[in-house]
Every structure is written in structure tokens, then in C-alpha cells.
Image (cartoon, rainbow, N blue to C red; front, side, top):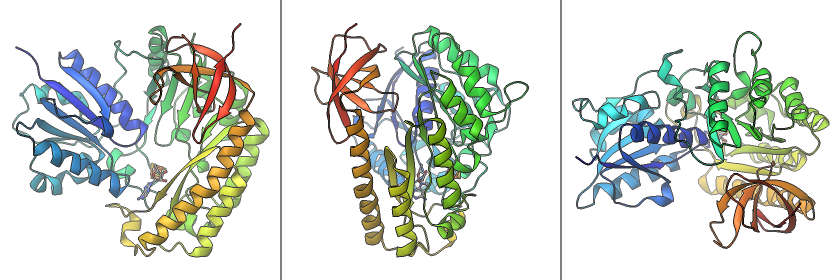
Length: 440
Ligand code: 5AD
Ligand code: SF4
């Protein structure tokens, strides 16, 4: 008997991308054929559709529901499974409303997918257990079948911060750290399988809690960076209130830790930061950036900005805009606030009109574009190490790779994915660079 073809479509953050890979590996090990894709890759040929959803913003939820609607209208619709944060957060209300979904599986129950699709769990629609600290299946290691030059490795899950706007603590549960030895062993195995670059993932990696000689995240970085053959080590996401000088010193000292840091600030006004419950001030954050740059002058600093939080006045917003000017990020992501269920901010009046949110978002993008462009110009003529990913998506005659600062570079060469090559930067685009391979 042929086992069904499973298609997994992923919305949201890197944690979801990583979870989808783990789901695919679990199902492949059980004999299923699995294809993985993002929202743009959706095609309607599978027997089973798993939609790995994101609840961080209302828009991501609407997109997932509309995708499910499209599949459900097909002549022979697939069996539809909703996975991820929406399944965890909304399963009760969606159960009666979105009847096209056969099963809801939260982020803590992916290990059950083979049983569920095999039919032995047919009677039950909802699999959304609360995470139990220390459960073996909480951190599913990457499979031996992992291919490609880069891999994600989860080091911690959940979040205890409860920022006023954020649904993550309700979707992903309390913070729990994975034992350092397990992390090391997984990175070592991946490196032996040909992986060159590992990104350590967690909602707030800076508050990693280990034990013994690997007690902190700084210890963990130094420990994992020692895995023989590992060329690049990245990590995300960092919280400004928990970023220690020790972490920054590790970035500065250890050659294979990428000189790049994503440090979401969210807002530049102390009033808004306080209302968000972020646990730091504008001044503390700017001092932090100074400290970071004193250790790692050329670090690629990126951030997240949230505009239109309830009560954000024009002058609060101007403080965010001025912080973006001062911080001189290499890149940023900016989002318009949308109220999320369970959160403290959902009880506040969402009083910044949508039009104003969009205007503020556009203003931040305009400011940042100038800084991004300036940072890219500094790279012109430089010879940079680039990790090759594969053929360029826009021009198949070129290949694409990433710099240590996470910039995409397109160039012409006959080199395999996973090669670490030196490329001279010859031109800059809006979001990517062009270059020439350096020989010798
Ligand atoms: N509305 C809009 N953006 C949000 N984010 C988190 N919660 C919300 C929300 N309710 C943004 C934050 C976070 C990023 C991952 O998503 O900027 O850092
Ligand atoms: Fe959400 Fe704040 Fe936790 Fe980040 S630190 S996941 S923004 S609650």
C-alpha cells in the first residue's frame, strides 16, 4: 500500500520552519513522502495537508485560514491538519468553525503525527497538550537524513516574559532549556553529515539555563562553537534585558560565531516600552548597543520594531524613529500592532488608526533604507566569506550565498552548496549584493 503524500506549508518564524523540518523527518521515517514549503509554494496535490500556523500577528492567521479554505474547496480535498501556534491558541473556537480541519496539533505534540495519520488516533481531533518540562519529546533532534549546508537547532522553548502584545507565551508555554550535551551532540552529528552553519533557536536564548560548566548562554555558545568542523554559529532571538557582556565577548572572541546580532527593541519611547513590559529603557538599550560595538565594531545589528501599540502618541513614535536613526541597524523588521488573544494589551483600546499605523511603518522603512544602503555601500570592494546556498532564485545562471552578516550575495561560479568561498563585492542592490568569486 502506498502511504499518502504529505504537504507541509509553514507560516511564521524560524522556530516554525525548524518544527516543520522535524515533522517532515518524523513522517519520512514512518514511510510517508513529504514536501515542505512556504505559503507561496502551496499547490494542491497532496493527500494530507499540514498547515504550520503562526499567531504572532492577525494577518498571519487570516492567511492560514484562507489557504485552508482554498484547499477545502477542491474537488478531492486533502485531509487537513492544523499545526503550530493557532492550533494551540485557538483550537476551541476553531473546532466548531473551521470544519475543514480534521486535526489540531499543537507545537508539543508533533511526535504523535505518525500515529495520528496512521489512523490509530482517529477518534480525537485535538492534540494540544501543555508542555511538560523535561519531557524527552519536547526537543526532537534533527534526523540523520538532514541535508543542506545550514541547520536549525532548538536550544530552548517557550517564554516567561509575557510582553503585553505577545501571544508566544500562550502558544509555546513556559521557558525550558535543553541540556547542553544534547545540543552539542546534535550539532556534532549535523556537522558530520555536512552541515557548515548552525543557528541556535529559542524565543529568548539569552535566558538559557544550563548546568555545571555550561550554565549560561555565553557558556553554551563557546561550548557549541568547539564542535569540530563547524564553520558558522548563529543564534536568535536575543532579549535586550538578558543580553550579557559575556555573550558579546563570546561573539568577539570566537572566530566561528557570526558577528551578527538580532536584538529586538520594539519601541524607542520609555512610556511605550514600559507599557509593553519590556524590562529596559531607551537609554539602557542604546548603552547596550555601545557596549556591543565596543567589543565587535563591525557587528551586523538588526532589530524588530512594533508601531501603533495602544497609547503610542505621535511624539512616542518620533522617539522610535529617532532610536532607529541612532542605532544605525544593518536591517530591521517593522510590524503594525494587532491585538492578540489572552495578552494584556488586548484589554487596552487599540487606538492608533490603521492608516496611522501604516504611515508610521512606512516612515520606519524609509529611515532604515538609508542606513541599510549605507551599510551595503561599505561592503563594496570588500572580499567576504560567503556560504553557498544554491542557485539564485531570480537568475538561475547565478548562485547565491550569505555573508557572515547574513546578506545575500549573487555571483557566478561553479561551486557546490555548502562551500565557503571568498567573494569580492562588485555591486549593491536594494536587498542583496553582487560579487565575483576570488580564486586562490
Ligand atoms: N502585533 C504586531 N506585531 C507583533 N509582534 C509580536 N506581537 C505582535 C503583535 N501583537 C512582532 C514583534 C516581535 C516579532 C516577532 O513580531 O515585533 O519581535
Ligand atoms: Fe513574545 Fe516578549 Fe517572549 Fe519575545 S520576549 S516571545 S516578544 S513575550
